[in-house]
Image 1 (cartoon, helix red, strand yellow):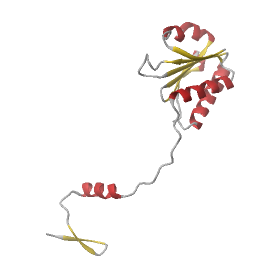
Image 2 (cartoon, helix red, strand yellow):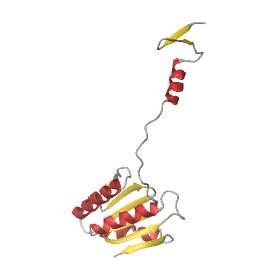
Image 3 (cartoon, rainbow, N blue to C red):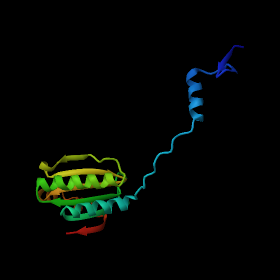
Image 4 (cartoon, rainbow, N blue to C red):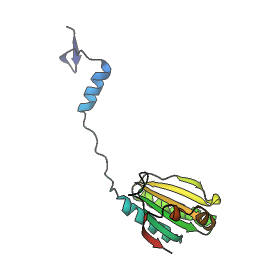
Length: 154
């Protein structure tokens, strides 16, 4: 049986492939500790988003609890804005708030010019920012009328 040398010491050859040997050695290396983030419950995150929307003067902000009705989301946050400029300001503030809370950077879907922007901020919270006309047209509160209304700020 052939012998190899590791740092000057005789070592018997292993009957494993080099890749398997690397995995074995990698398994034994201590891993660096990652900094821990404080994780929010989805209800806390939803309330923080509501606060962010109110800070930027979004109108008719509604928080709906969908946890018992839908598997894809726990909360909908629905808000109305007056114009495209306000929609962009609201979306920027929501993105900054959620990022500061330790969530991944959310990506908005849709355009403020179209009248409806959806933002999945993570942890089961979805934000809908509507123009006045689009909110009346799509009527999400009517569609999800069985959902429990947690907060309504007009």
